[in-house]
Image 1: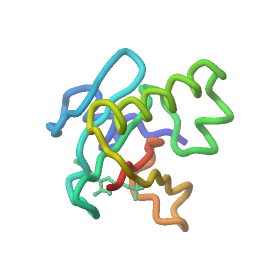
Image 2: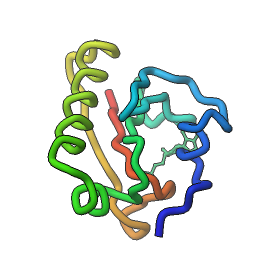
Image 3: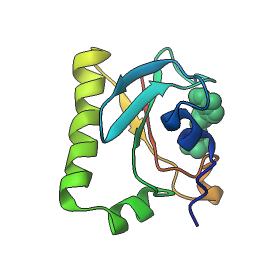
Image 4: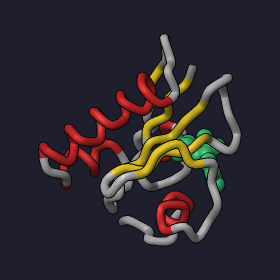
Length: 107
Ligand code: AMP
């Protein structure tokens, strides 16, 4: 069940501050508050989906394509990372703490 008051929903709405990297009508990106690498960015879709599984089941092919294309643009063209890792925790047992789907970009 999606909680509209999760931390990332509040960040997208502007109810909580963040160190923003990119925003458009479908995607929001900001720096992780507890970085686990020299560069640690998060990318979230502006959709009410709790994790990767939920995102892929409930989103359209265009929404899924847009999310990953923008994530690549953020890593390559905005952050200008030559080498990076992308990661998503899918479910509490995997380490997911915030239940709004997001990917981590680590470099
Ligand atoms: P996950 O464990 O995959 O759900 O990742 C959640 C991430 O969100 C963690 O790396 C946290 O450090 C990060 N995080 C939690 N609260 C905030 C916040 N207010 N601003 C930015 N990042 C946050």
